[in-house]
Image 1 (tube, rainbow, N blue to C red):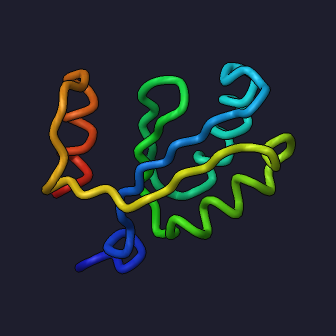
Image 2: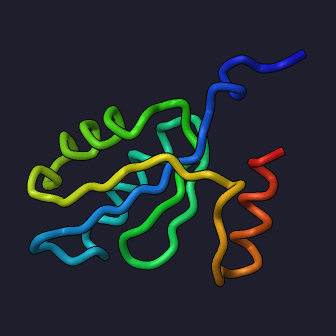
Length: 102
């Protein structure tokens, strides 16, 4: 039997750039929010995430901007396609994303 909620999930690339605050200061707040999405996420670099969620880019962007201290952030959210991705990433990234693509 197919889990409809799981079937509606998709991968998004999320870029979050502070204009003033240190990334280290905001990671705990942002990652606590990402943990509420009933999906999964992977952070690579200081400001980039791949997010497995049923929410769309606009909804996620609006919710992040509403977080405490995030009103002045640059947010970039866009669909992420497993079929068209390529690059040099750690082995655990490829294992994570392969698990989700099944």
